[in-house]
Image (cartoon, rainbow, N blue to C red; front, side, top):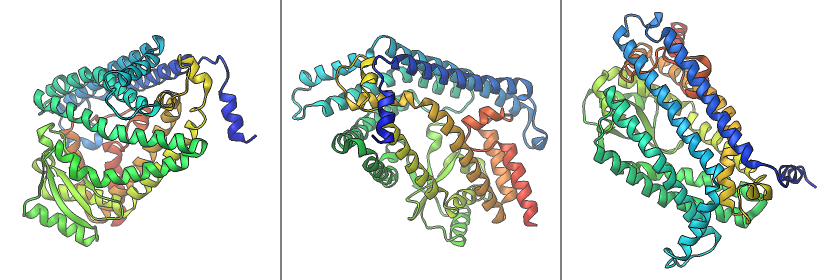
Length: 441
């Protein structure tokens, strides 16, 4: 018997209380993240009203106070939202809602959806996963509404109307239904056909899906939510095109996105395959609030990610991560005790996959630290690339401006930041930029 088979058998113990284990994992995740938020709250209570020494004269005290208030509010609401989601999960476990929803999906397929030409477990699984998405949406919508129209509104960030918010939610649900159904159908067919070796084929399938969305998203999905217009001729366009030409960056098009339609937060990014031509997208809010040199410096940082192959590396790492997750799932999808613990007599794969996401929570927590550490390292490298291009001063001022405009925290607890932030804190980045600038001289 192989080690894989032995491990699968060891995990499948008759009578094992998987409900208790998953409820414990969910509760532990909530407790850990609430503890991290508490650490950050304590940090802000101690120093949040103070401007760090390195930022004095660059960030005003009233901005520090508003930033502290904004961070407090988001942290407390985050704990409340997590508590609601925990209660939601525990309620489903306690009252056996999963098997009831599975039976409901079967009844719908036999009655209301009887006109469909397809039947069987696969179709029932697709009905089930869409019902699950609708249930999750019902819980998340009130939280999203409060976050958008109370918190973001209070601090001057929200620009959405209620009509736009509702329209976005409907579009998101429809896209989830169309693409989610197709992806889940492919996943279930692959598991059914290849059984214990499905993880190899599923990894290839997900890679193809990722490449598809990299190509498909900017052309067909993003225009459903935002308007992209070509950047007008002028100093900014000339500056960016010169930067791209000097660095041999395969720039195809320059767009301005109407980010101000929904929020006053700012950003810039590029789209396209790692090895193909790129489209640079700049938020209109960034152009409005930054100088030409500052915007160019930010894009110098983004081009640094491309030049240092960060996107390609992350794509490869993501494939390894997905393969690892699918390999772990292979230990569970035939686990009879898991199904029985949750009240299932059969073994629908979609159920084990749904529960597996909860079993995976400790793994995901560790992975968050690792991926954030890697991401932070890449951010430092991209900053250094921009410094090497001569943008140290402009990049520093752009980062400070973005930090101020977004009311980001001026002080962070190291453990909270390591778990929650994919980017180094502003003071850490400025210190590294200053060090690299001096090194260049």
